[in-house]
Length: 297
Ligand code: GDP
Image 1: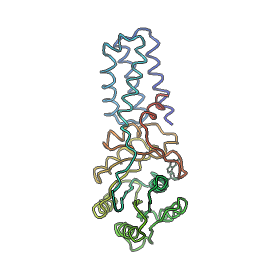
Image 2 (image 1 turned 180 degrees about the vertical axis):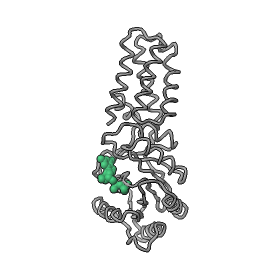
Image 3 (image 1 turned 120 degrees about the vertical axis):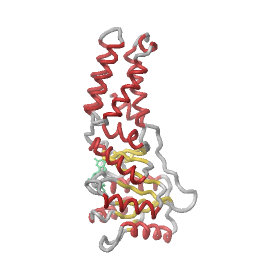
Image 4 (image 1 turned 60 degrees about the horizontal axis):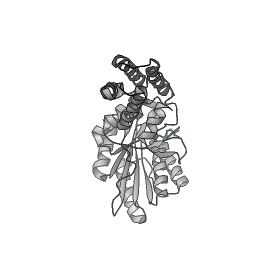
């Protein structure tokens, strides 16, 4: 994870220690290199620039310049600013005190949305809740079958209908009625449609689901492998839907870091969990401090 970024940041930051006493000029040069490393990792341009401005402001202060190991102080500042950029920790959901909490999962096709629905159901079940899945991704017929298989694996009920003649809003409404009928369901997770690219029809469908179902949480599955593309999608989904959180998927892959470092700042909503593998138990709470530590190596 983040190998290129970590190596480039190390280069930039250890370079600072080599010159003996640090001057303001050395620090500014080193931090320009840090900014370059962030841009190469596909971090959003404005975010990389304002990040470096914040770090520079603190790093060229008297306290750092007069410190015994100013390089260590600067690494500490970068670490803290990375945490601020990705945090805070906000892993849980606001569950209704009584009745059924509805979680709407959205994202582009292939982002890991359906898998993440299963992972969430598994996790919530482990926490003592009683989740149910609803197969409302009617765009990709295989998604319905996939969700049924996943529901079987995590042993939770699933509501699925044949895609023909149905619309997604109706499937969600029927799913919620079914959950009420079952009586022992307290959380419904809606697996909604994704497309390869955002388009008007997709957004209209999702907006309708949001309007009619009034989900308590709208969560965006953000493919960490796709860098700024994922972040731009997150922004568009957030404008249409008012997201409550993001789950970063595929962080076990060869990701450059851009999505992880930009998505919270761009959307203003917290990263709640990270997907770190295809298996249904590969979902972890997001800890910005640990992630910052991994990024710095
Ligand atoms: P959807 O089209 O958004 O519903 O995407 P899927 O849930 O079908 O996932 C697309 C692919 O990504 C599948 O092969 C999943 O196994 C894989 N996938 C999902 N989450 C993760 C993850 O956290 N790590 C890895 N390595 N693969 C994942």
